[in-house]
Length: 171
Image 1 (tube, rainbow, N blue to C red):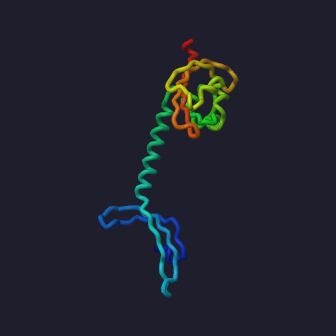
Image 2 (spheres, rainbow, N blue to C red):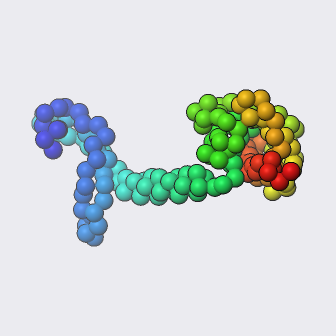
C-alpha cells in the first residue's frame, strides 16, 4: 500500500493475502492511480499466483534431482538436440572425452563421436540399442565406446540422450 501512495503505478508486486476460506495465497498486483467521478481512485488487478509458485518450486526440485542423478552416474551421459549440438553433458562424459562442460555444450557431437551422425535421425534412431563405435578425446586419441541411445520428442523438437561407456579396459 505504501508503494502505491508514493507512485501512481505499481507493477508486479507480490503480496500475501488470505482468502475467505482462510487459505493464504500469493497475489501478483498491478495497479494504477486514476480519477473516477472526480475522485482519486485506484484501478487494480490481482492474480493468484500460488499454484504457479508451487509448480515452479516443484520444477526446481525435479531439476535438482535430475542433475544429481546425472552427475552421480559412472557412465558418460550426453544429450543432443536435433541439430546434433550437445545440450547437456555430465562429469563422467567430460572426463572420458577430456573436455569441460562449458566447452562441449553447443558443440556438435561429431567432435567426440564422429561416427554417430547417421544414427541421430529422430525418425529412425534406435531406442536403447547398444552400439560399439569410436570416441575421440580432446587430444585426438581414439578409443572404443559403447553407446546406448534414447530419443524423446518429435522431429523438430527431438532430444537424444546417449549413455556412453569407455570400453578401453575391456579390450
